[in-house]
Amino acid sequence: ALAAESAQAGPPWAIMFAAALSGRDGRAPTAADAEAPLQRMVEDIKNGRIDGMLPFDRNGVPVQLA
Image 1: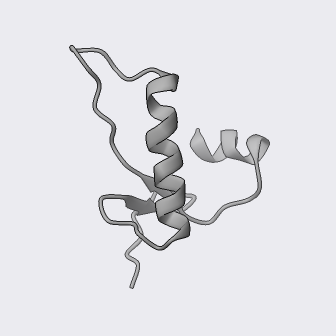
Image 2 (image 1 turned 90 degrees about the horizontal axis):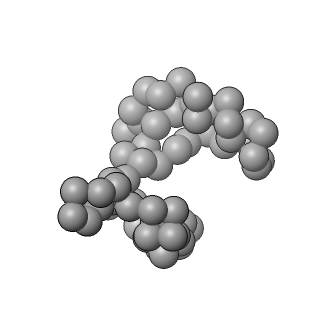
């Protein structure tokens, strides 16, 4: 589903990085709650800092980066 959605939303990609974001008081984070952490994640990836993120290919297969 993510691959199909991303094909419509932006440029082609080869690797997706996943990370977790906890909620608060038993509720999932809102889009507004996720915005700043998402921007930090993008900057970290641009700078080669991928600790704590899981890379996957377009088929959802985990990728090991050297």
